[in-house]
Amino acid sequence: MMALVPCSPNQYQYQFKKWDIKKSMTTEQKDAVVSALGKRKRNGKSSGSTADFTIAEAGFKKEVDKRNLKRYLRKRLTGIPDMSPSVSV
Image (cartoon, rainbow, N blue to C red; front, side, top):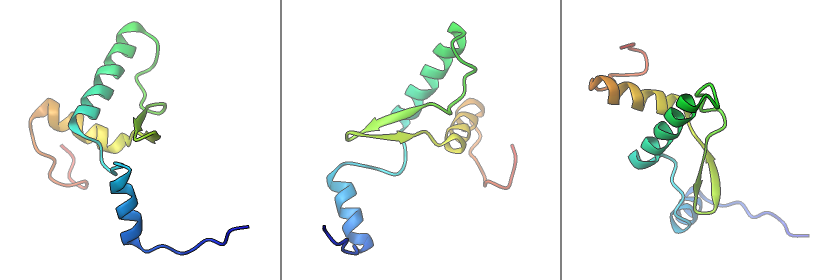
């Protein structure tokens, strides 16, 4: 049985960078999710929910952050930059 060795945050950051795993989504990934949601909505296959969307990244599956995607859509559709989470547009 192996004992778990505590790792420093720098060690985790190094491994994530080495594995090409990022916390945030790229614009291309967001556009792909929006496109897939639009296709689902047009075909009547789903309600257009992001609940079951995952992104494959470096062999791992990462769930789509709904708040981040909504903020991106609002900014993209209105052209108005998001001021802060507490200010509604």
